[in-house]
Length: 163
Image (cartoon, rainbow, N blue to C red; front, side, top):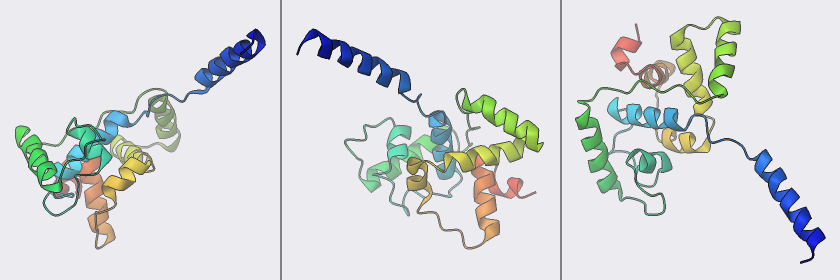
């Protein structure tokens, strides 16, 4: 490789590095949603197959290359929820610049904090890892869906979120 090729390669690497997208701004938020789905029993470890779900592996601090069996994932998830006595996590706000952009949208649309929380959940659900997580959830009607979303996004018991 001559010097001109090396120089072009260095320039190309710099350009690619400049174009790298930042980490997922919803990464921590999605882990909180995953925990809340299990804590609220919207996802049931014994009923739903969660051993191969990437967000569950991250939540349990496991490598995605070595998936857990469904029974092992179920036991670990139950233990994790038991540590918090079933309390849900208040979802972390997304990282910057997404948080600032959502604040602008919330101001323009005059969204109150619960509505913003539901919007954040809806945006996070656009990612394939969240879709993989919520895919097994069956909601028989709109009310069940609304209660599940509010319970997970607002970190409140489903009965309390319906008020």
